Length: 112
Length: 115
Image (cartoon, rainbow over all chains, first blue to last red):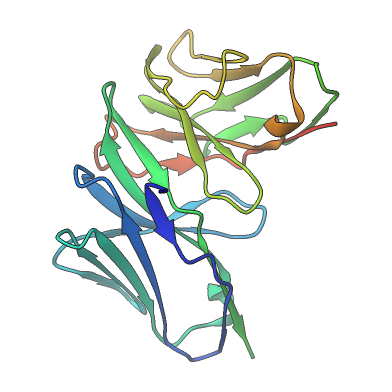
């Protein structure tokens, strides 16, 4: 079983739609959680951190459920420019420090 | 300001050839990470440096992979006797301090193709 699991998609949605992505992680010792965005043939960039209390940044809302080891991302009023791959990321402490573990990513295509 | 830079951006190698990939982190960043991203997959952790010390190399797939950061700034990932399964994008990331919750800033990656 992969440490971080996501539905790879693609999710094809019309402009203006609301879309939700889910992610589960297997290591209960995971410490911090993120969503990264990766455009085609580009590097990943941090979209937002994820907290148990839930956090919102404009049209984006992220939520963490530690008991279920589940992370979500909600995008409201989706734009063409939201088309990208969304990577669920978990930060775990290792013997030497910390490392990020990425899911395979969920591909989003927003269409006219 | 300048972000993380990597060179070369693209590398084509014949099977069995050695390659060296370079990462210039953001100036002053203490921590540096290497990741391997195969097509259609998320990045996978390879190794981590804090200054010049390599604190975690658990993700290196074989002893053909070697990374160094001798002066605590620029890092080089070396792959010896490349194989076709080494074809991937190699990403470097850095953080300003100890990476507990620090944002990792990624470079553009080096796309390695092994023929």
